[in-house]
Image (cartoon, rainbow, N blue to C red; front, side):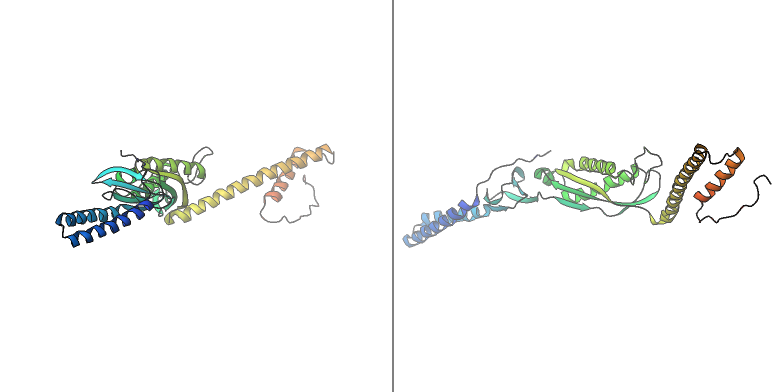
Amino acid sequence: MIKEITRKYPSGYLAVVVLPALLIANGWWFYNAVNSQSVYQIIGSVVVGLVLIVCLLGFFMVHPNQARVMTLFGTYVGSARDTGLRWANPFYAKKAVSLRVRNFDCDTLKVNDSSGNPIEIAAVVVWKVVDSAEAVFEVDDYISFVEIQSEAAVRNLATTYPYESHSADQVALRSSPQQIADELKTEVQDRLEKAGVEVIEARISHLAYAPEIASAMLKRQQAQAIVAARRQIVDGAVGMVKMALDELKKQDVIELDDERKAAMVSNLLVVLCGEENAQPVLNTGSLYN
């Protein structure tokens, strides 16, 4: 693999002063050579003028958070990271590579989770180039490479885990967002390592069931929520009934046998667990009549 070699290139401000001065001096030399009709001096001034003109091609600019990858006739010679106006060998090919932080917003993908349920998933990947040589020479187009590999990582992650967990210790896409984000970042980084790219952050930005099963899954979630709510209501009602019986016995308000306790428990549970308000009923008879 081709690794980045950072090289120092001279400031271009000195060349801005020197090269125009040399061009003016060469023009004066050419003028005197023509007046003196010296063929050798004319040829010499023309050659020097062409060399100076070619040297003007050596100027290049490096912006903040940017690198210039230098190649000489197809051979990598180094990268320039020092900002400002620079000058280098005019025969160098100078390719600019941005080192700024970028966002890739993955399109919404339709895949099956580990349980076979069709889901829609999308992610945001924050990345930047850290090795300009690898980004230019190891892959054909590093921006396209980042996009394709990020989508592949999202697809693979979605097929590895279920949409929602069915047990307390099971990792799922919906219930374990931080762990899923960490694993997504690790997988995307492994895929982009060869392109000289560092992944700063990767997170799921959209997660939902596919439209064809969304309504059925919504009913399932509603049923689970109702069951959970009922369980909590029943647990609370049982606790309140037990507390009422304990208080009655503790304060010796009334002595209840097992049958009356059962009737009292039944009535209290109906009142506490019912969805509608209880209606008072006057009982003028006896439980045993």
